Length: 137
Image (cartoon, rainbow, N blue to C red; front, side, top):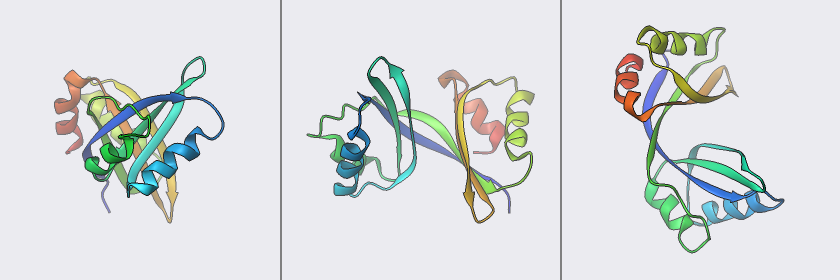
């Protein structure tokens, strides 16, 4: 089966980098019925972290953030890539972008089990439409 490449919207929040914060946020998301397609978090500055949310339904994410102390960024764009796990799968994606002289700003990829993989991929906003075309999104 061929890889699928989807244009996705995401939002991020700068959160406290402390024990229990992930649990607090995950609980708020669950309570609001948010289904995440992807999530990533990493240190941003001393005592803070950046949490990236790719929600199946943005309205649910916005509801969850409201009143929970979760200040979300404006909508941003990235790609969600899913496919059969195989040697060189990401290399194929990177080659398509390199052929168009598009730099990958960041990526997170993981083997999803059952012979599948998933990847979130970011490019510069001004290169997003060209990248979409190169990736067939």
